[in-house]
Image (tube, rainbow, N blue to C red; front, side, top):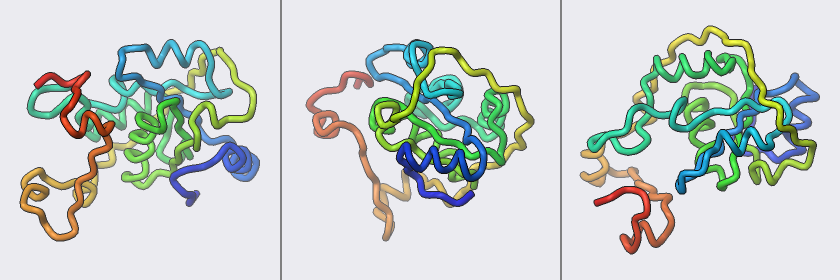
Length: 186
């Protein structure tokens, strides 16, 4: 299904009525060390599965690759399969941090051609019932889809200032300015 990258709660309800239930993914994660899984277990959208940023959406961190490097295509396919998210599923992801972590899942799926959107407003934007029972979907086979080269660029290309290349830094302004660094030591 072709849809925009951001849907409000009404559009998610309409999507469910038109084409069957989308796979709802709770992708809450916190810089301050709180547990997204505990937040999910306390309350989440009905039928939502928990997608762990560190476990499912990143590779091992390191000094040369950063804190949340992209997983290999094989690892990502394996994670989606374990979670019961197949390549033909429509996914709606949410968090409670302005789309910071849920947006990563949406981008990863969309760059591979899968139908995925972010719930506008996150869990607070949902006006329906919530639940606390974890949802476990049956694992599915997911073929490995390689990350498309055109979706990435090398740091040398950015540093060269190639025409049309724009680097966006989405950190908080005080982190961007170097005034504070609560997470990554220098």
